[in-house]
Length: 461
Image 1: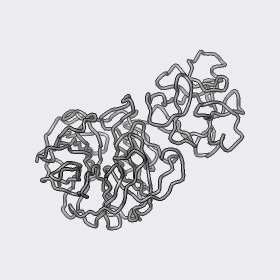
Image 2 (image 1 turned 120 degrees about the vertical axis):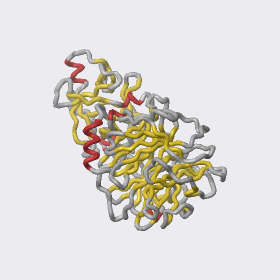
Image 3 (image 1 turned 90 degrees about the horizontal axis):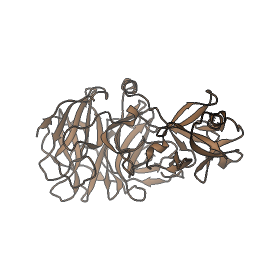
Image 4 (image 1 turned 90 degrees about the vertical axis):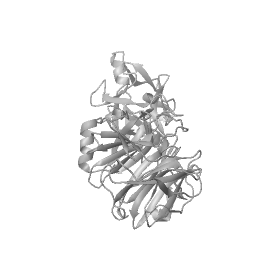
């Protein structure tokens, strides 16, 4: 089967709680390079994703990138705008995947689908070549089969026994249900005939592989709305055996990601745009502990993502090219699923995700009354700033008065509940801090442990 050449184009659990060890189940797609558990990854990371928000105000079917130094806290690049968008096929992508190739360059692949019409059938996937994840060239549609089915969530890994890359994806074959298929290729231009890579006998999608972890390969996938794991000492089609039960929040989960950072494995999953993360120090046990949501923050509006380690120079060059966001979000310490936002001109914290998502984006500017302080300028209503009025936080237009400037100025200090986070003390009422109470943002004196937690926030993106 041949690729169809086209013109080239440049182009991260709920509220905080105690985490119990849970037997794993897996869904989604990911392929990490070969490494043993002792070879801890300390390099930076890139995340690839498309974007979605509940009312589709933030939905975009182009390739989005974010970077991280720990695979937990993420910074979107290019102001969270796409860095490249497909120009053929369905005109949009889902489920993007980045493969670091044997030669040090990259291949980017994605599902050929714009929107949510799951009945669409296509044998094609989107493919780009990239030397450095800053340019995306040789764009093409790659045909994988002649079956009357979709071709979802492509991933790939190097199979040294074959001297070829294995390209895995979800499709319905003659079994009548979704299985993980595989083709082999050396150049992502032409591929071998498809064959079944893994079929547990029931419908599965979103296969992702952690390769050669102490001699064992681990395949995670979405099965029965949960994340399930299989393993094999071989990479041969048909060699994997399920060894975990299902892992999922209420309502189900998909799009798993496996990422190793500093000797810890993380399993991410997408539950309708909200990412959950679990962790383990030993993939062989099949048990995972829920990661404290304080510890990780997904990029704004990210959906069905992929995570890969990258060299420091690639990270540095990506940041230099695409830039840091000109805005921040603020995450609650004791309700880490909630973020600052404005609603009807009042400040509050609400659970992510929500629309308009732009209500949660803030520009931290020098304090209006004192440039050594900080003021919170609304990104989507830039003439307005958060200020206190009768001790409530409001979003009001700057009237140019001294009183307004003082009410809208705060001192950023070490977090009252955690010094690695932040708290914000009023400029003109220095005995009071911004805190949430009944989910509303207000200005209060802080005297209890609960209040200290209410007044602690993380600056994030």
